[in-house]
Length: 128
Image 1 (cartoon, rainbow, N blue to C red):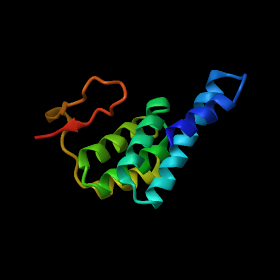
Image 2: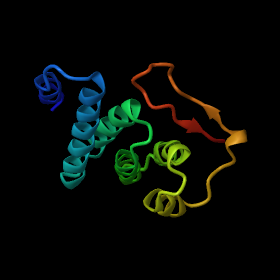
Image 3: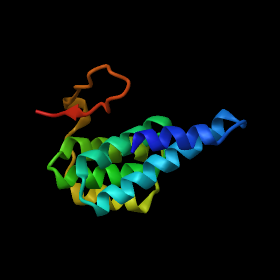
Image 4: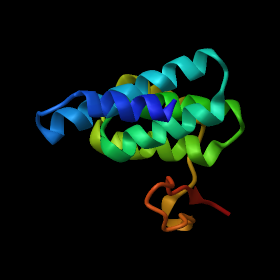
């Protein structure tokens, strides 16, 4: 899994850091798609989190992460994936459709960020 991603990114060789990052994002997003088909929801969420950490506007990774989160009843995580991606792509039809499927969203002003402060962890908003 991740070891293959690291070796693939290293295999890019000399080039721009941006090219290597784009490759890493694509690899994480593509791994997430495979993991969805395998119904490995938590692993899928991890890869989507890695992809959106590198490229917050990556709508496919956000959609896949939210979809996997729904499958394991992690509603707040699904909402976070969708809302964060919509900040960058407010007209993305797939994300807007997923937002509608998630149902009414709590007022963000009433919530709080329950993130751990760990840069490798997605910050999930917790609502009362």
